[in-house]
Image 1 (cartoon, rainbow, N blue to C red):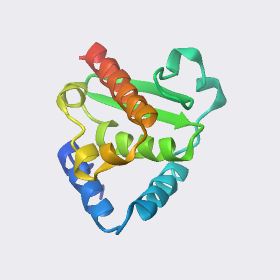
Image 2: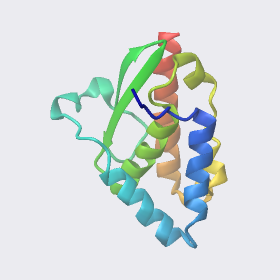
Image 3: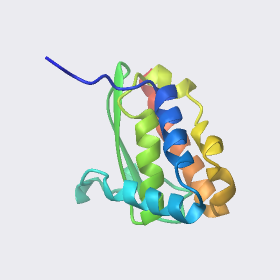
Image 4: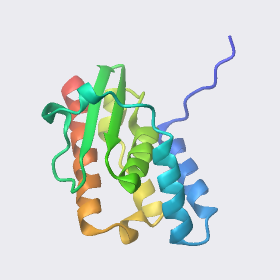
Length: 142
């Protein structure tokens, strides 16, 4: 059996920083974000309910948890191309990890790649709301 180990949350954040460092300007970085969002797995319409909706986002965002304290998985979707890319980054860092690790992992990649300076206030608020909901799901599972 030859499986590739899932990198740690810290390594996932470093990988994201390394990938974004490759791009010279924010036009290219936004395009990369959009491309990442297009690679999200299909999201069933039946999951697009008020229970899974992330409030605080200008665009529609849904976040669905599964698993248990030993390993939590998240599926998410948005009606916005850039927000879908943000979701892809968040899931790389937080999905398929122990709930306790999710709760203590700070999203350092946001500062590392300069994202905080290049998101509109509404997108920044939405990203914060998504992270808060994800961590709340993990805290409830611990």
